[in-house]
Image (cartoon, rainbow, N blue to C red; front, top):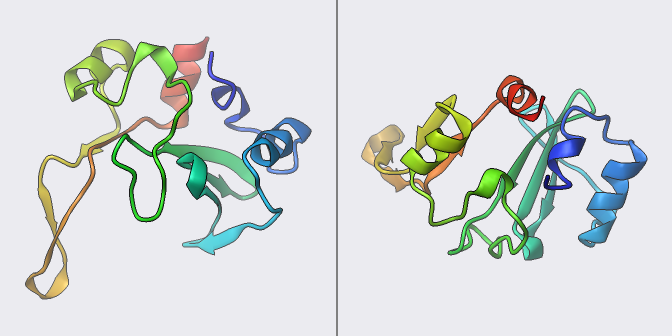
Length: 131
């Protein structure tokens, strides 16, 4: 199993969580965004989210990179790859809680933004899959 999945649900000061972040050159700073603490490990293609000081989400950036992030080079969980389709994800992980990226998102004042492909699975799904 991927080392980062074992840390979901742990406190941000857990020694294994800190060791993981330091392995990827974390400098000991959290960014604040929408009530969350975020650790952006841009040169490794990893973004960690903490809510109420608990590790709640990890974003692994795909092969093209995104907004200053390099592509993630590590192992993806559950035998998926960045070339996997939404259907491949659903075969391995079940139906995601949210998926998008195959369309543009309309934002205020008539503009649109192209979203990268993304499938989100909440903690409950991971706990079910891991048990």
